[in-house]
Structures are given as structure tokens and as C-alpha cells.
Image (cartoon, rainbow, N blue to C red):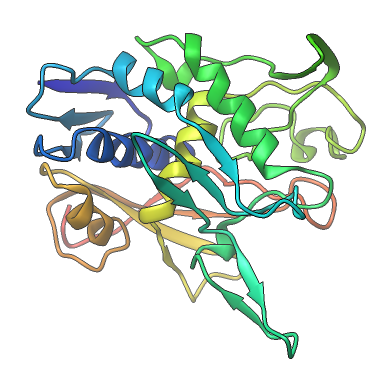
Length: 272
């Protein structure tokens, strides 16, 4: 059985959302030989089970218990996605030692896009909840405004996304200021935002040390691979046949701490 999803490989959010789907499927069906692969404009996921469907993965994803592992930190604590995934999400975290030295535990702190008043657990929970009625024919193109709810009433202000998706409209680059800081409503692609957060736990781009700003490169592998092998392909540590390698940056979108993933550009690769 297989799942096919249209994907733009130059959108890092969509790419890592595909990686997130592979991670969830691998944990949902651990004995079913789950593999994934990219084509020019598609991602295909394979699993030897009759349950293999995007609807099944997303239903279990939305229903899974989500725990915040540090009750004193509402901004960026580690999270735990419960049964059937049993997945700790902490790639953005750092630990401060008694002598004030900060250690990057998750290994992905450079990729973190939210800070300040943004609450990571709330953003993830709301984006994940929106996947309950996502368009299964085009999940990565389902765009909407996400409002927080409290006591059954919706807030007047939308939840700002992580900005993993490079298509975000109305950024500070367009307006000359940050819509978040002005409390303007924004729209987002919730499936991309939620699944990319999951995907980045295992699948990391390599850091381009030659970039003037924070620059990263990922490889879209072309032959079906399990998650354990695909993670090495993404970072370029394994030589594989690929659809392309892509470079993106994490530029500011207004304010000192607000950042987003840029659109990626294709780079030369010996494996394409």
C-alpha cells in the first residue's frame, strides 16, 4: 500500500512535513516495512499494511496525547507525543548547566523559528488539531486562519505559525513591519507546520558554513528508504540517488527574534 502527496521540494516546510509523515508512519506501523521517497513533485510513502492511508495517520496523530515536559516553560519546552507514537520532541532545546554554559541537547537549535511571546506547545497543538479536517487530497495546500479557543470561545487574534512553510503571505518583507507585533490576523498551512515540527526531530539539514546568514542544505532522496537511512540522506551524510539538493536560509521576518524558513534554491549535487 502507498500514499502519494503533492509536494514542492523547494519549500522546506513541505519537505520536512513529508519527513514527519514518514516518522509517524514508521512508529504507527513498526513491523510493516515503512519507507518513503521523493519524486519531482511528489512524496510517496510505502507500508505493508491495509491501514496505510493519510487519513489513518492524521487521525491517530490528532488523537495522540500531547504532554509538555517542563511545566515552568511555556515557550519552548520538550514535548511528548504519546501512544501509538511515543515520540519525544525536543530538537530545539538547550540545557543550561550550573556554570551557565548552554548545551544544545536536541541538536537543532539553529533551526528554531519561534521566540519571545510565542508559545511553542500552543502553536503545535493548534496546528495539529487543525489536521483533523484537513483536505486529504491536498493537505499541504490547505490554508486557513487558526484561532485559539478558551472556554469555548475563539480568540479574535489568530495563532501565529512556526513559519516553517515558505509561502507565508504578509511577512515583514512585504509590509515593512511584523504582522505579529501589530496583532494582525495571519493565515497558515497547519498540516505543514505541525508535521514539519515532527520531521525535524530526526531529519536535519546540513549547515552550510559558507553562508553569510544561517543557511542549511537538505537532499530529497529518490529511492524508497526507511527513516533510519533517509535521515542520513537528508543531511548529505549518505550517498543516494536524489531528486535534488536544496539550500534555504532562516531570515528575520520582523523584530529581533522572529524568523522563518525561506524558499529553497536548488544546488548542484553529484547524486541527482
